[in-house]
Image 1 (cartoon, rainbow, N blue to C red):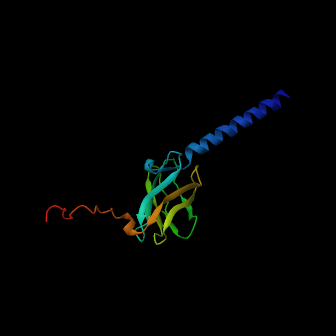
Image 2: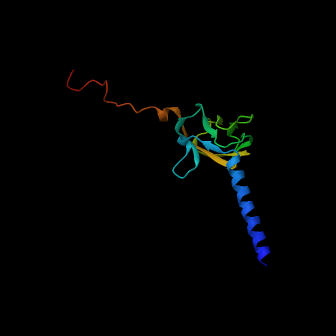
Image 3: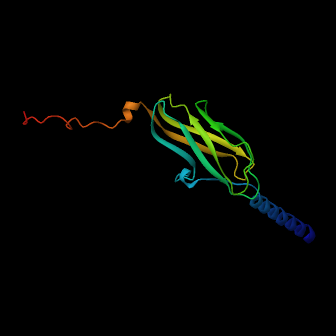
Length: 155
């Protein structure tokens, strides 16, 4: 019975060591700190943007692992959000960008997700875009009606 217990213990210890080596040797996607929100999520915040403006956002990331990183698929939650991503392997230490174009002809709040599939140890990753699309005139600063108006007593 001691031999069986010892054999099982050695087997489990070996499996644990193999798993640790696998994690430290693979590729790891690490996003720019400016894209990480207080909950640890990857988010690009457009804020308030004008209708028909450029809806391109960029998700900068680095391969923080020891093996080449290959993005196999990047999918958005709807057709109004179109991602483009690097198709070549990203070497350890290299930075790259995933671009996401949102259709700003659509008015209202934006909250869309982009699923990033790769060979990274932390795959898949869900990145998000958020913001609000408003009419151009709603973005223009309000004019002070008293500026430039003649005063009542100067006639």
